[in-house]
Amino acid sequence: MSVHPDPQPTADGAGAEADDQGLPRIMAFDLDGTLLDTTTRISPRTVKSLRSAAEAGVELVVATGRSQISVIPRVAHLGLFRWAVCSNGATLYDLHEHRVVEQVLIGSDDVVALMDGARSVLPDIAVAWETTAGHQWTESFAAIDTDILAPRDVVPDVDYPPAGLVKLFLGHHRVVHDRLFDTLAPVMPPDITLTTSGAPFMEAMGRGVNKAVTLAALCQRLGVAADQVVAFGDNLNDIEMLNWVGRGYAMANAHPEILARARFRTDLPHDRHGVAAVIERLLDC
Image 1 (tube, rainbow, N blue to C red):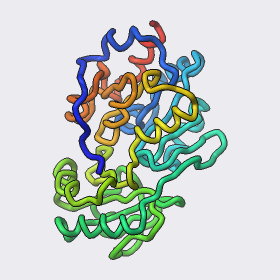
Image 2 (image 1 turned 180 degrees about the vertical axis):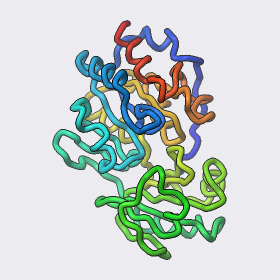
Image 3 (image 1 turned 60 degrees about the vertical axis):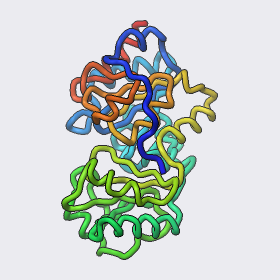
């Protein structure tokens, strides 16, 4: 099970130690809390910096917990991104060809084990899920939280979600955030990834799935080494990616564990153009 990886050396601030290494070949960006501001938009300054990086030959990659259905309306219109690592690494999507390139689903046995484990510690756990067609929220989950990911289809509560899941959401009306993670992590099936993007609920993906694994596979496809990649993120679903790349930046607004474990951090938070400030420095090197 992928939970908290071993610590990595940290560096306070974005700093010249990182920036004087010059432009990478790939920049990978989480969306919420990172590239998107508090209105879930990309600011004009950030768009300008992304465009300048692309014109300088940098491949820009989305790496998010959101599904491709949610990613497309937020970034496709910019014409700057081809590749999107979606659903915390469960899906690699080609925004130019409008197709899923690779996808790892949660096995039906693991869905049962996930649910049985979760109910062993929280009998009233609520669930939602992502399929290849979109999201479904159970009625009990919709009562807990719909702010982060609006439901596509609310269905009655079920004993077990259907087969063929990209991602499973686990929520509770009292136990949330880090407490929920710490409660559920010990009872998850082996090699299932349990994480969060900052929402009060947890997200579970198939065996061995995380953003780093899928980004690494994309880099192999493109012939790019890890030390030629820069990545930005803010929450627990970003830690493996930030540790794998050559330069991993925790946002100034990041979860405390990410700030403690990431090797570099931005000087500014996501709603004050933190990503743009780093890109501008990299372009000046």
